[in-house]
Length: 169
Image (cartoon, rainbow, N blue to C red):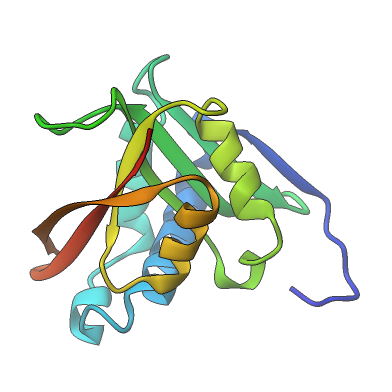
């Protein structure tokens, strides 16, 4: 995103018709985010089509789930999702499942707008994030989260990814 162009930015709930565009952006964000953590061969398995299939299911989960997309000049450039906690030992009732924004739009305030669309102000919640993702760690620190000491290693694209848990009380 160039400094001289100011695109029209909106954040709105995800729609069924967004699945294909979300799949493309999701795949691109994974490549941008995980290229230093996961092998190129594993990342090449991430296809926009497969991600679009996942979005078809995620977009229709019900009222307890908040899924929003960020659009710049009508094109999806990021997304966020939150919903009921999935962990048995969850430190809060609500979990931030994901927030991804194309690299070109990071640092513009759009990530915060996405975050605010998915969670209530001061709502206690938690999330898992890659241990080696300092930019994301700084974002969550700025938004009132702290590491609670929990860590796990998850299978990810046929490899493993170590994640740490952030909590906002």
